[in-house]
Image 1 (cartoon, rainbow, N blue to C red):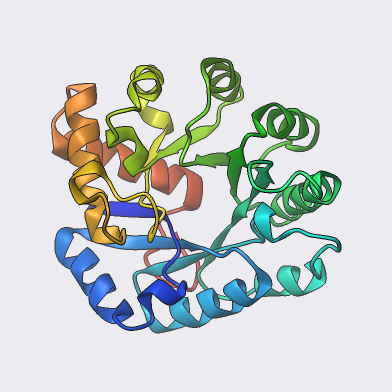
Image 2 (image 1 turned 180 degrees about the horizontal axis):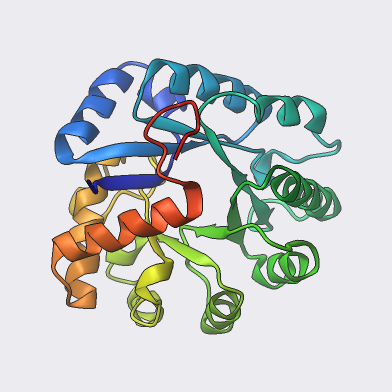
Length: 262
Protein backbone atom coordinates (compact mmCIF):
# COMPACT_ATOMS: atom_id res chain seq x y z
CA UNK A 1 0.00 0.00 0.00
CA UNK A 2 1.38 3.39 -0.96
CA UNK A 3 0.42 6.77 0.42
CA UNK A 4 1.61 10.37 0.39
CA UNK A 5 4.42 11.41 2.71
CA UNK A 6 5.24 14.95 3.78
CA UNK A 7 9.00 14.56 4.17
CA UNK A 8 9.53 17.90 5.92
CA UNK A 9 7.27 19.83 8.27
CA UNK A 10 7.56 21.79 11.50
CA UNK A 11 4.39 20.88 13.36
CA UNK A 12 6.13 21.51 16.67
CA UNK A 13 5.96 25.23 15.89
CA UNK A 14 3.73 27.49 17.96
CA UNK A 15 1.73 28.20 14.81
CA UNK A 16 0.03 24.83 15.39
CA UNK A 17 -0.46 24.97 19.14
CA UNK A 18 -4.18 25.72 18.89
CA UNK A 19 -5.22 23.18 16.26
CA UNK A 20 -2.40 20.64 15.78
CA UNK A 21 -4.68 17.63 16.08
CA UNK A 22 -7.06 19.00 13.44
CA UNK A 23 -4.11 19.73 11.13
CA UNK A 24 -2.90 16.14 11.40
CA UNK A 25 -6.43 14.82 10.90
CA UNK A 26 -6.84 16.90 7.72
CA UNK A 27 -3.56 15.50 6.42
CA UNK A 28 -4.68 11.94 7.03
CA UNK A 29 -8.02 12.61 5.35
CA UNK A 30 -6.12 13.91 2.31
CA UNK A 31 -4.04 10.72 2.14
CA UNK A 32 -0.87 11.99 3.82
CA UNK A 33 -0.24 9.15 6.27
CA UNK A 34 3.34 10.00 7.25
CA UNK A 35 4.78 13.38 8.23
CA UNK A 36 8.47 13.76 9.04
CA UNK A 37 8.74 16.53 11.59
CA UNK A 38 12.13 18.23 11.27
CA UNK A 39 13.41 19.65 14.54
CA UNK A 40 15.32 22.93 14.50
CA UNK A 41 16.81 23.24 18.02
CA UNK A 42 17.34 21.12 21.12
CA UNK A 43 14.02 22.29 22.57
CA UNK A 44 12.39 21.62 19.21
CA UNK A 45 13.85 18.09 19.32
CA UNK A 46 12.23 17.52 22.71
CA UNK A 47 8.84 18.76 21.53
CA UNK A 48 9.12 16.77 18.29
CA UNK A 49 9.73 13.57 20.25
CA UNK A 50 6.69 14.25 22.44
CA UNK A 51 4.57 14.74 19.33
CA UNK A 52 5.82 11.61 17.61
CA UNK A 53 4.90 9.65 20.73
CA UNK A 54 1.42 11.18 20.63
CA UNK A 55 0.57 10.98 16.92
CA UNK A 56 1.10 7.70 15.01
CA UNK A 57 1.55 9.42 11.63
CA UNK A 58 4.44 11.63 12.83
CA UNK A 59 8.10 10.62 12.55
CA UNK A 60 11.09 12.63 13.71
CA UNK A 61 14.22 14.14 12.19
CA UNK A 62 16.54 15.36 14.94
CA UNK A 63 18.86 18.31 14.41
CA UNK A 64 19.70 21.96 14.96
CA UNK A 65 18.93 24.41 12.16
CA UNK A 66 21.92 26.53 11.05
CA UNK A 67 20.08 29.72 11.99
CA UNK A 68 20.14 28.47 15.60
CA UNK A 69 23.95 28.22 15.62
CA UNK A 70 25.45 31.31 17.28
CA UNK A 71 28.50 32.07 19.47
CA UNK A 72 28.60 28.61 21.01
CA UNK A 73 27.71 25.17 19.69
CA UNK A 74 24.71 23.31 21.09
CA UNK A 75 25.19 20.30 23.35
CA UNK A 76 25.50 17.57 20.75
CA UNK A 77 25.66 14.88 23.43
CA UNK A 78 22.07 15.81 24.28
CA UNK A 79 21.11 15.63 20.62
CA UNK A 80 22.81 12.25 20.30
CA UNK A 81 20.76 10.98 23.22
CA UNK A 82 17.56 11.74 21.32
CA UNK A 83 18.52 9.31 18.54
CA UNK A 84 17.51 6.29 20.61
CA UNK A 85 13.87 7.39 20.83
CA UNK A 86 11.24 5.50 18.79
CA UNK A 87 10.23 7.23 15.58
CA UNK A 88 13.56 8.96 14.91
CA UNK A 89 14.41 8.23 11.30
CA UNK A 90 16.80 11.01 10.20
CA UNK A 91 19.30 13.68 11.22
CA UNK A 92 18.18 17.20 10.39
CA UNK A 93 17.42 19.66 9.54
CA UNK A 94 20.98 20.78 9.35
CA UNK A 95 23.20 22.59 6.87
CA UNK A 96 24.32 26.14 6.23
CA UNK A 97 22.48 29.45 5.97
CA UNK A 98 24.33 32.67 5.18
CA UNK A 99 21.25 34.66 4.19
CA UNK A 100 20.53 36.02 7.67
CA UNK A 101 23.82 35.51 9.48
CA UNK A 102 27.40 35.70 8.26
CA UNK A 103 28.93 36.24 11.70
CA UNK A 104 28.84 32.58 12.77
CA UNK A 105 29.82 30.78 9.59
CA UNK A 106 32.68 28.88 11.25
CA UNK A 107 30.36 27.51 13.92
CA UNK A 108 27.70 26.67 11.34
CA UNK A 109 30.26 24.62 9.42
CA UNK A 110 31.43 22.82 12.56
CA UNK A 111 27.85 22.05 13.61
CA UNK A 112 27.12 20.72 10.13
CA UNK A 113 30.17 18.45 10.29
CA UNK A 114 29.01 17.07 13.65
CA UNK A 115 25.55 16.35 12.26
CA UNK A 116 27.18 14.45 9.40
CA UNK A 117 29.31 12.44 11.84
CA UNK A 118 26.19 11.46 13.79
CA UNK A 119 24.37 10.47 10.62
CA UNK A 120 27.27 8.28 9.56
CA UNK A 121 27.69 6.78 13.03
CA UNK A 122 24.01 5.89 13.40
CA UNK A 123 23.39 5.10 9.71
CA UNK A 124 20.62 7.68 9.40
CA UNK A 125 19.68 9.80 6.38
CA UNK A 126 20.73 13.44 6.46
CA UNK A 127 18.24 16.25 5.73
CA UNK A 128 20.09 19.38 4.61
CA UNK A 129 19.17 23.05 4.32
CA UNK A 130 21.12 25.58 2.30
CA UNK A 131 20.55 29.26 1.69
CA UNK A 132 23.19 31.49 0.10
CA UNK A 133 25.69 28.79 1.02
CA UNK A 134 25.48 26.11 -1.66
CA UNK A 135 29.16 25.93 -2.61
CA UNK A 136 30.31 25.52 1.01
CA UNK A 137 27.62 22.95 1.72
CA UNK A 138 28.58 20.89 -1.34
CA UNK A 139 32.26 21.06 -0.36
CA UNK A 140 31.64 19.82 3.17
CA UNK A 141 29.37 17.06 1.92
CA UNK A 142 32.04 15.90 -0.52
CA UNK A 143 34.62 15.79 2.27
CA UNK A 144 32.54 14.22 5.02
CA UNK A 145 29.68 12.10 3.71
CA UNK A 146 30.63 8.50 3.06
CA UNK A 147 27.53 6.35 2.86
CA UNK A 148 24.34 7.92 4.18
CA UNK A 149 21.53 9.19 1.91
CA UNK A 150 21.24 12.97 1.63
CA UNK A 151 17.89 14.70 1.19
CA UNK A 152 18.18 18.30 -0.01
CA UNK A 153 15.17 19.91 1.62
CA UNK A 154 13.19 22.48 -0.39
CA UNK A 155 15.83 22.58 -3.11
CA UNK A 156 16.03 25.98 -4.82
CA UNK A 157 19.65 26.16 -5.97
CA UNK A 158 21.20 27.17 -9.28
CA UNK A 159 22.08 24.88 -12.18
CA UNK A 160 25.66 24.23 -11.09
CA UNK A 161 24.55 23.22 -7.60
CA UNK A 162 21.79 21.07 -9.01
CA UNK A 163 24.15 19.20 -11.33
CA UNK A 164 26.66 18.60 -8.54
CA UNK A 165 24.00 17.33 -6.16
CA UNK A 166 22.58 15.13 -8.90
CA UNK A 167 26.02 13.67 -9.61
CA UNK A 168 26.47 12.97 -5.89
CA UNK A 169 23.24 10.97 -5.83
CA UNK A 170 21.26 13.25 -3.55
CA UNK A 171 17.49 13.22 -3.22
CA UNK A 172 15.56 16.41 -3.96
CA UNK A 173 12.63 17.20 -1.67
CA UNK A 174 10.37 19.65 -3.46
CA UNK A 175 7.93 22.02 -1.79
CA UNK A 176 5.42 24.72 -2.62
CA UNK A 177 8.14 26.95 -4.09
CA UNK A 178 7.95 24.97 -7.35
CA UNK A 179 4.41 26.32 -7.89
CA UNK A 180 5.39 29.99 -7.56
CA UNK A 181 5.15 32.03 -10.78
CA UNK A 182 8.76 33.26 -10.44
CA UNK A 183 10.18 29.71 -10.09
CA UNK A 184 10.49 29.10 -13.84
CA UNK A 185 14.23 28.38 -13.70
CA UNK A 186 13.77 25.93 -10.85
CA UNK A 187 11.11 24.09 -12.83
CA UNK A 188 13.61 23.55 -15.63
CA UNK A 189 15.89 21.68 -13.19
CA UNK A 190 13.02 19.65 -11.78
CA UNK A 191 12.31 18.12 -15.17
CA UNK A 192 15.86 16.72 -15.10
CA UNK A 193 15.57 15.00 -11.72
CA UNK A 194 15.35 11.21 -12.08
CA UNK A 195 12.08 9.89 -10.72
CA UNK A 196 13.99 7.74 -8.23
CA UNK A 197 15.44 10.88 -6.60
CA UNK A 198 12.19 12.79 -6.02
CA UNK A 199 10.56 13.50 -2.68
CA UNK A 200 7.89 16.02 -1.73
CA UNK A 201 7.30 18.21 1.32
CA UNK A 202 5.44 21.22 2.68
CA UNK A 203 7.94 22.83 5.09
CA UNK A 204 4.83 23.75 7.09
CA UNK A 205 4.03 26.35 8.29
CA UNK A 206 6.15 28.07 5.61
CA UNK A 207 6.01 28.33 1.81
CA UNK A 208 2.41 27.39 1.08
CA UNK A 209 1.84 26.41 -2.57
CA UNK A 210 0.51 29.04 -4.95
CA UNK A 211 -3.13 27.98 -4.51
CA UNK A 212 -2.79 28.64 -0.78
CA UNK A 213 -0.37 31.60 -0.81
CA UNK A 214 -0.81 33.86 2.15
CA UNK A 215 -2.10 31.08 4.37
CA UNK A 216 -0.31 29.08 7.03
CA UNK A 217 1.04 26.04 5.24
CA UNK A 218 0.07 22.61 6.54
CA UNK A 219 0.62 18.99 5.43
CA UNK A 220 -2.80 18.65 3.76
CA UNK A 221 -1.65 21.29 1.23
CA UNK A 222 0.91 18.78 -0.04
CA UNK A 223 -1.63 17.51 -2.55
CA UNK A 224 -1.60 20.86 -4.38
CA UNK A 225 2.17 20.65 -4.88
CA UNK A 226 1.85 16.98 -5.89
CA UNK A 227 -0.79 17.78 -8.51
CA UNK A 228 1.35 20.59 -9.89
CA UNK A 229 4.43 18.35 -10.01
CA UNK A 230 2.54 15.55 -11.77
CA UNK A 231 1.39 18.00 -14.45
CA UNK A 232 4.91 19.42 -14.79
CA UNK A 233 6.37 15.94 -15.28
CA UNK A 234 3.46 14.77 -17.45
CA UNK A 235 2.78 11.67 -15.38
CA UNK A 236 -0.43 10.51 -13.68
CA UNK A 237 -0.78 11.64 -10.09
CA UNK A 238 -1.10 8.05 -8.89
CA UNK A 239 2.15 7.10 -10.62
CA UNK A 240 3.90 10.02 -8.93
CA UNK A 241 2.60 8.88 -5.56
CA UNK A 242 3.95 5.36 -6.17
CA UNK A 243 7.37 6.65 -7.17
CA UNK A 244 7.67 9.02 -4.23
CA UNK A 245 6.50 6.35 -1.80
CA UNK A 246 9.18 3.98 -3.08
CA UNK A 247 11.81 6.69 -2.67
CA UNK A 248 10.64 7.33 0.86
CA UNK A 249 11.03 3.62 1.62
CA UNK A 250 14.48 3.57 0.04
CA UNK A 251 15.71 6.54 2.08
CA UNK A 252 13.91 6.23 5.40
CA UNK A 253 12.50 2.71 5.42
CA UNK A 254 8.79 2.03 5.40
CA UNK A 255 8.18 2.93 9.03
CA UNK A 256 4.86 1.24 9.64
CA UNK A 257 5.34 1.51 13.39
CA UNK A 258 7.34 3.59 15.85
CA UNK A 259 9.53 0.66 16.80
CA UNK A 260 11.55 1.19 13.64
CA UNK A 261 10.70 -2.04 11.86
CA UNK A 262 10.58 -1.80 8.12
